[in-house]
Image (cartoon, rainbow, N blue to C red; front, side):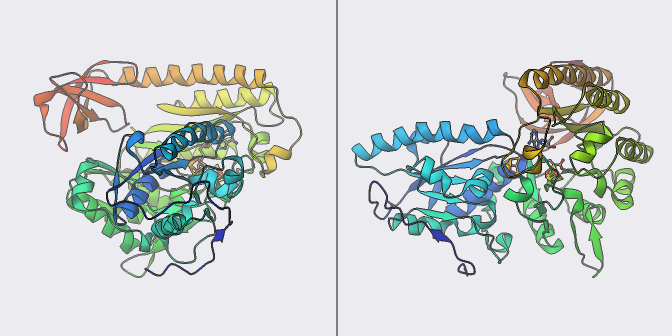
Length: 469
Ligand code: SAH
Ligand code: SF4
Ligand code: F3S
């Protein structure tokens, strides 16, 4: 593997306990924070480490290497990492007394954003590795075992995905019948509240052939449902097998041809990148699930402008009309930020109005969290915590009422369900609805991986109970 295309930093801090070559059956414990892309990345890091002789463990006490895959999106998410590092540092000290080593690594978006600062704040950390260099993990670990502390956050010029080893089929089978597949990474949109363009870098699309090959491997291992991932997944584009430039719509049609792959999803999309072909895919491609996560953040044009979203509330509503014209039963999901700097009560009411107009099947809402280095953090008009709290409560009450209405509307309907795991109670299995709710069915309704038609008989908090038709 060619690895030395860009320099990495060796910050030259001597470790507190000089470490020697690791023993044979090394174990790695990975804890994942943040979004689905981190879930995917954690799997790929585990794959890279498996090729290096590490076995994954669910028990942190067994681990020789603890890897935290972190999220920087809001202050709370980033701070969690340091409290966790405090606990692991104590573990490491106990281990050292017993003469056994524990390596600590920080990966993900906090690693990219804070780099060497993490080791300054938490000297027990041995390595810091950013999302663009995960393929170098075995190499970085070798250097750490050589007794250095390593911070590897430069953007690699080589293609990370080309160099990340593929998992064994048995490992894929173990991961179940649904899978994530990153097709696009990074963001060039620079919304003024958001760290992602800084932590994930600029937009990169993976080539068609690479994506198709990975999807085929997943299907051969029994995966029935694939969710394509990207920070701006619908900005994905690439040269297709016919030599033409493809967008996400074409890619979805191609993936739907793979035997065994019955369900496709994609997330997260930006309203500015929903093109006609993608909307047509919602109309013409039965494998594409009728559920779309399309964040809007605010219903006020003034705030949208300050956020640099570069669309208005009306643009968004018109877009949803077009999507619903293509696929009447599509259910919408979204993200909202309340309390962006300068947001007035009237701005916030415009958000509530937009939510009422769209009617979401589910949505995520957050209090604005100023992030270092983003333009939003420097703006005037930051709001008191209490105002943010109060607006969040009102928005969440509205969204949760809509979510309950949506779930209630499913009672009596017959829907397709992918059985994906055993139930918590004996005699049950759990499936997944087209809109991601868990569907509780009788154990004998089918095997894991089957897609069956069921009739919804009643609902739980966010789950559905169903009988076979
Ligand atoms: N790429 C996606 C969003 C990625 S971040 C998109 O463009 O929609 C996921 C969500 O976190 C965002 O949609 C936003 O609602 C929220 N978020 C991002 N930065 C935030 C911040 N500084 N404070 C609060 N919420 C934030
Ligand atoms: Fe962040 Fe905006 Fe990019 Fe989404 S589009 S990742 S919110 S900068
Ligand atoms: Fe968090 Fe990075 Fe994802 S900041 S939301 S883990 S892209």
